[in-house]
Image 1 (cartoon, one colour):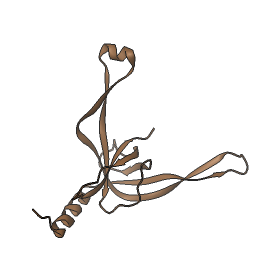
Image 2 (image 1 turned 60 degrees about the vertical axis):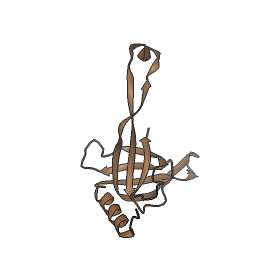
Image 3 (image 1 turned 30 degrees about the vertical axis):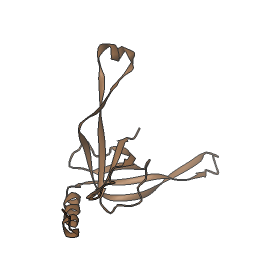
Length: 137
């Protein structure tokens, strides 16, 4: 089965229409030395601002026991895989960049900071620029 260019373009538009969150992506800029204090001053460089979508995976990614006492009691901390989707043609993102969710229909997502870990868009018929992310500490 052949996928037409017009079908793929529509699929990409449909995927982007689901991106109702807004975010800003930054990375550390060049370090300079403050002439008064002698301390390093690292600014940030904005690399993207616009639409996005935050999503968890459909299932449990892993379980992490918290310390030997917690292991003995069977306590676990659930860890879910998180993704951020950007429009298909988003370029220039790199692992380590920080995504700050600036607007979301879900108030629990607004102001969250997520660090880009690795791209997840390497597929033949990609409809979005997808990244695995982790909470930014």
